[in-house]
Amino acid sequence: MSCVLVKVLFFATFRKKYGVKELTVNCDGTVKGLIESASKILGEDFLNDVYDREREKVRDDLIFAVNGRNIKDLGGDVKLKDQDVVSIFPPLAGG
Image (cartoon, rainbow, N blue to C red; front, side):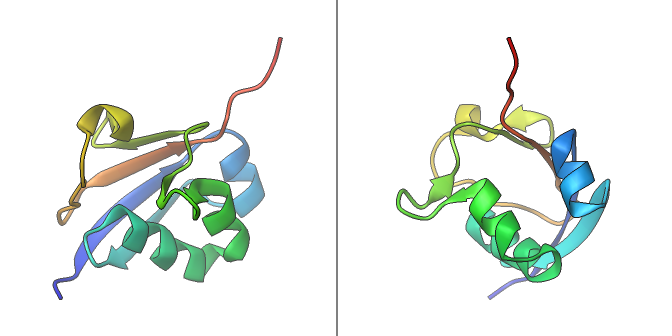
């Protein structure tokens, strides 16, 4: 299994909740692997906040971008590469 190094950027309430603006994570090159590796650093809450375990994908109510492109627009099985940048925005609320 190959290992890739991915930078993860946090925005809005995720920055405050996890106390970091960015994090560099070693993972297996899958989105799930990235989230699991980050959750080992940030805690189990991160996994629950970002990943829908029943549907085996990133939660629909947040923005998860790989190199500036929303994962929803990338389609299929996204493979991460060394030096990719993942940006995570929490669900939006307001009125």
